[in-house]
Image 1 (cartoon, rainbow, N blue to C red):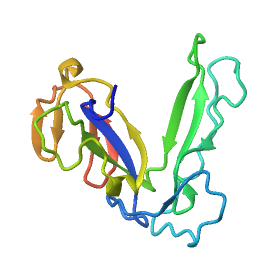
Image 2: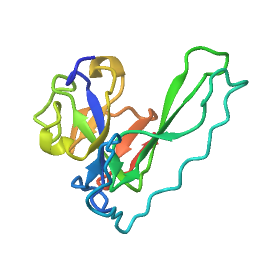
Image 3: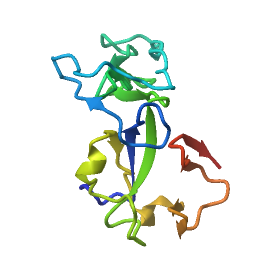
Length: 181
């Protein structure tokens, strides 16, 4: 799907010095070879411990399956995202799995430029350079509202009615994320 066509993109931003819901944190590229010019300051929220390795389903056919390694930008010099792979039960291609430190990151929905419609929105595709400065990860919604058979509520507006009993991804004002009916 091309940029801006998804109905709901989810961007994960660094928290500013550990303050939830803000997007002005210092981040460094993962390939930066020189040490940061400023001593890392995490603020009042310390990072979570590195996740424990995942047990493979059956016998691991590839080395490193289930072993986490840092990925992407760092937040104040600390890894905020780890990734690994797993082979699904029964075999098949490896699937990527990401773990994100919710103490260092906050989520923000970005409405697509074409779907769901009903804009303008405060946060929409394409992501502006000022917002990209704290962007750590982005995920495409992967479908258009006409195919979703669900709802969309953002910025105090009901764009498509939510479906009772159906799962909803909820992003709170603090940037915390939950899934519920």
